[in-house]
Length: 151
Ligand SMILES: CC(C)(COP(=O)(O)OP(=O)(O)OC[C@H]1O[C@@H](n2cnc3c(N)ncnc32)[C@H](O)[C@@H]1OP(=O)(O)O)[C@@H](O)C(=O)NCCC(=O)NCCS
Image 1 (tube, rainbow, N blue to C red):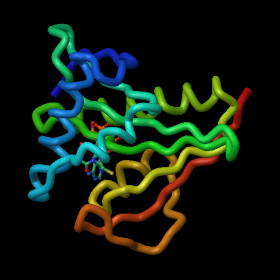
Image 2: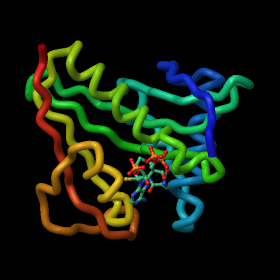
Image 3: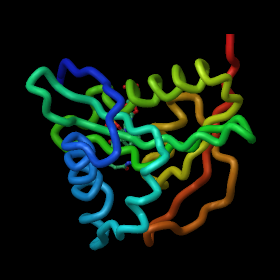
């Protein structure tokens, strides 16, 4: 499917944030029979929140980024693209935006916990597996990372 979309940074607690949580719940939690706790969502308070929209301002995809300035790293989490819009380049565009943030902030390394079924998606963006398999939210994951060169 070909879709025009744009990425925006959104604010914790806003209307856009509530839409983002709905999308994350639909794509990342309900299929596993899970939901977010208040503690889960409180982790977003100090995070960067990115969402992708179509021309009707409908949310198509999102991710959350946690900066660790002391270690010069970013952790990406909660990457989700709504089902009808998957495989249209939205996830790739979100990951490129994260890299732009990383370069601006002089970050050396981006890392994430990839679901096993999404490892190839991240490999296509240049991420490498850097852990053994482990279980998170009841399913297999791998830690993955990408080294970033700031200009
Ligand atoms: C995984 C996900 C974020 C990818 O986003 P997307 O917008 O569908 O992916 P894109 O269209 O940007 O894909 C970019 C490339 O990765 C490939 N790709 C996408 N999802 C893939 C997957 N699950 N496995 C293997 N390759 C995948 C695409 O085919 C495309 O390849 P190409 O560049 O050779 O054409 C999205 O499909 C999704 O939300 N899936 C369900 C939830 C999930 O697994 N989230 C990840 C949690 S770690």
